[in-house]
Length: 267
Image 1 (cartoon, helix red, strand yellow):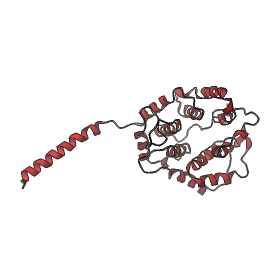
Image 2 (tube, one colour; image 1 turned 45 degrees about the horizontal axis):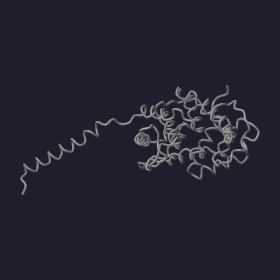
Image 3 (cartoon, helix red, strand yellow; image 1 turned 90 degrees about the vertical axis):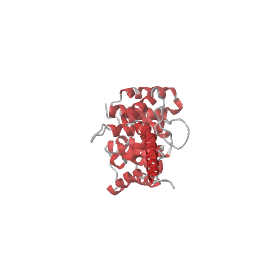
């Protein structure tokens, strides 16, 4: 039988060995929000993805990110080079320029289901909202997924444009909390979760996003500054997940009771 003294010595050695193994882990710096933001900003250097550029313009106006000061200029350059996409690009250019001029037929180019939900909100100050819009918004919210997140985005634009919706406060509370419930508690971070979290911050409902999720977002950022469409799948960083991750972290790093609007003001 092993003597008591030997047992004590063995326990001490095991404890010492475990401590030595833990030291490198404890000394590793945890990712911080400011460093993650700088890496994500660098990810978009020279980006020519149209939808990303519109969000970069929002970040320039809201957070004074100087690297994105030319985002609208880059967007216009891409627009001039892609005539097959020009109509829909002119439609969404309104996000960055309230004086944006549409051409005949531009609005008829809107065909994607989520765009059919958000474009009326984007132009409600000019065109008003269709009579059926409240039903469409409620239906979209009930569908979950990206229709739910875009219902929240549409509501943000309706508010910023000063338009009114004949929906109850209970519905809007549901809209916020249903988006928050899209953020799972597992270790995976995916594009839909990033969108729900970013849009909640845009809506002034950032308190519904758990701090643990922010830690997970930081932990899965790639070396190139981007995020995967889903952190549990191989591949390259995706611009959509990355623009959402950056937008989210900017709101976390620079909290405010009042931000400049997402939609550009009139000149």
